[in-house]
Length: 292
Ligand code: SF4
Image (cartoon, rainbow, N blue to C red; front, side, top):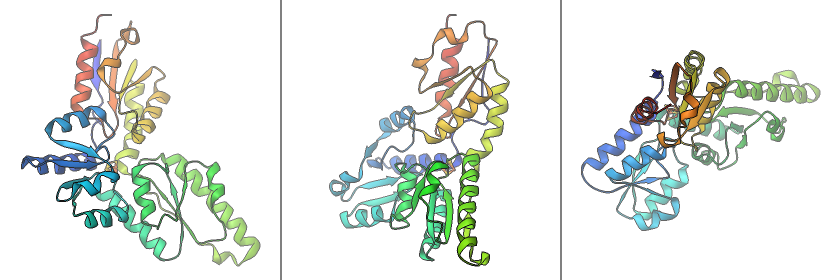
């Protein structure tokens, strides 16, 4: 049986950067605190915990005066920066530059009086950060059906959480545009239509679709490794399963089942942008060592 790790799998550069920043800070031996889990992967969190990275919540900030707190790749709303300053906490800002750019663009449109629509998950840390840049006034939609919540009478801009699915983004954009057009045409001059769709889905996620699809289709069985909370892991796993119905989702090697590999010649391993390479290598080793 041939077991192959997908060459395009592994951390995106935004996550590599965040972990590099955290590891650099810990070199000095001082404790470092991550505001929320640094990555959607419990195995990698465990490795970093052993090196001294503790996970804290916003409620812990008052007890961290004088300490260093890491802002992870997802970013934070402006209120977190104000609170940290008030509590005397030093922030180590590892927000992914791609996310920072989206925050800036959203803020600019909000300041110019636009109704902001974010295609994303309202409880996701990145979306909470983006919302904060609109005074929590943006409307979060996670499906085409939810586009109904948007007021067609306002000038509107649609953004996306960076890890969402592109096809759905464009469907939502088309539905919103049509609703706004229909409203304006019946009410004002057509030139009054003011709608923009800003595709802010990260290339590190969308670029992987095609390669993952091809890789998954070329294998008898696929094992997809990711944290169960990883948003991008869910999107990529769905693609994997579409291309190869014999796909299995695991968080760690202990979840593998020998029966998945009976009579199989090729097994592919892939993962989310938050899945470390060492973890996929461990899964590969476990599959190769299985008695079938
Ligand atoms: S997926 Fe993109 S936006 Fe998200 S952390 Fe990675 S590089 Fe940054």
